Image 1 (cartoon, one colour):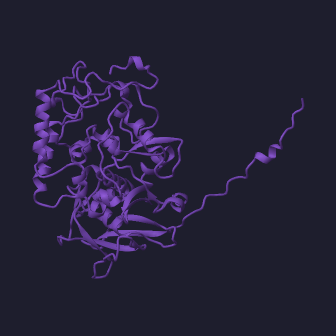
Image 2 (image 1 turned 90 degrees about the vertical axis):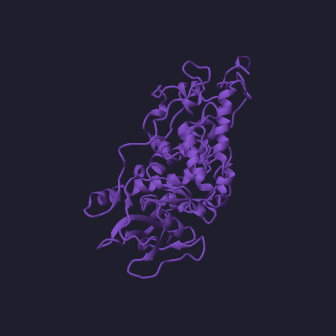
Image 3 (image 1 turned 90 degrees about the horizontal axis):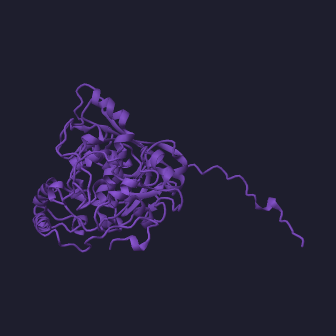
Length: 427
């Protein structure tokens, strides 16, 4: 028997050519006009768009300026001109140049927020960040053993590149800022029953796009023209910009728009850190600095109902039991998830049907509820089930669960670990 060998050279492919580069053509510089000379508060890089136009979304620049002005709405002008700029449509791009941001109240020396932790999330998002405007709807967050693995399974690919390997689940609001999350009542605003680890705050990306990419403020996902698109925020991302600048991304319906908007703010403060630090130390510049105290208790670890120390009572709140580090990797102050889930993450998973709010959360709902009758509901608020008076319904439901702990759709149920035999599941 003879064997015929194939020509091995036929299987070799040439060296891949250098990635296409989308040139950085300039910056949109945002100035504070209340000082002489005007103070620079942000520099947003402008990469040549795939269509060959040099600019960045007008709405994005307004968002950035409003965030830095601690959510005060305002207008943009070309520096040295008396006329406010207006965008002819929601796809308008702003070319490189110097612009000043003026708040609508007319306050000359409006304060500049100098860090993410000094910033507070607005009560209502800008209209173009409405969840339905981005083609999705809010769905209940997934609950269970491992939110990181569940989101990767649901997404099935990197939501930016379409890659199916080297995937990681990325927090939109970083895990390291869990205290900020609690201080700003994000559980209430996003109906996040698993706190900052909720699937409504998780997005699947290729691993190399998280640490050196999104978490380094290299790019961010924004709302533009009714779609979610990628925008590069720093120089040195020419190859990424050539392929993904303004590229539409299909964002899962579970992702809450508040979390996307907060990630925009987080990345903006990170990329502008040196600039804002200089403003903070400058004389006569009005700034908002990080508070050293917080108004919410630190998050506690959730325990199973019936687990020692876990009564399931509402006083234990969303996570139940005593606070403290139980060895879970996510308790470390890092920005990315990275790696496989620890044993503790599996063992300390929340019960399937537990939806228990802390007293702090319920009071936050009542505070938000008080505003709902004074204005039209945003569409994402309607999608999450909010309506004037909804906080009373939440409090009544909480009371009923306390008085009737035996009522459960999944009594004695638990989630089986991967590889566990069916006969070991306590269903």
